[in-house]
Structure formats: C-alpha cells, structure tokens
Length: 104
Image 1 (spheres, rainbow, N blue to C red):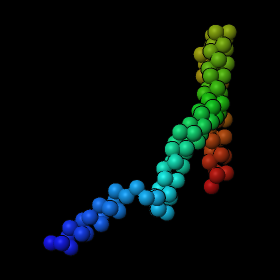
Image 2 (tube, rainbow, N blue to C red; image 1 turned 45 degrees about the vertical axis):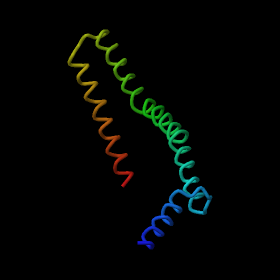
Image 3 (cartoon, one colour; image 1 turned 180 degrees about the vertical axis):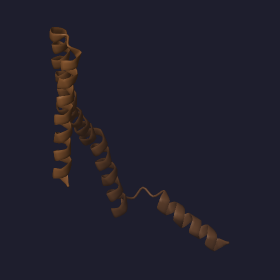
C-alpha cells in the first residue's frame, strides 16, 4: 500500500508542480504562438482574403450587372441582351478553363 501512496504523491507532485521545466517552457511558447496566430495573423489573413475576394469576384460581377442593366434600359431588346450575356459567359468559361489547366 505504501508504494501506491508514494506513487500517487509523486504523480501529483509532477502534475501540480509550479517549477519551470523545459517542457513547461515549450508548452508556454506553443500557447503564446497559438494565441498570436489566432488573434493577429488569422485576422490579417481573413481581411486580405476578403479584400482579394471582393476585388476578383464581387466587383467584376457588379460591373457586369451595371453594364447589362444599363444596356437593357437603353436598348430594351431582350434578345441582344441575352446574346451579350451568353458571349461574356463563354469568355468567362474559357478563362476559367485556361486557369484550371495552367494550375495542373
């Protein structure tokens, strides 16, 4: 029985120790690095991604909408409008295919 109590005391002493060890220093460094990554670097990355997404995806779609909305009001011909949209969609499809192939 004494051995079990001694072992329990040793384990508790190790687990509840306030002495700084190499492992505890490494753990503290990992935790502080994780905090910096999550609070600083990740936020910057999200802002950068949001800005890039808006510039590359949202702004061109808005420009297309404005362009065709204006033409519809000017021309009023639905067939011409549909042909212009179809042409631009085909151009976008080819561009996306070329980008996809270039990444391979």
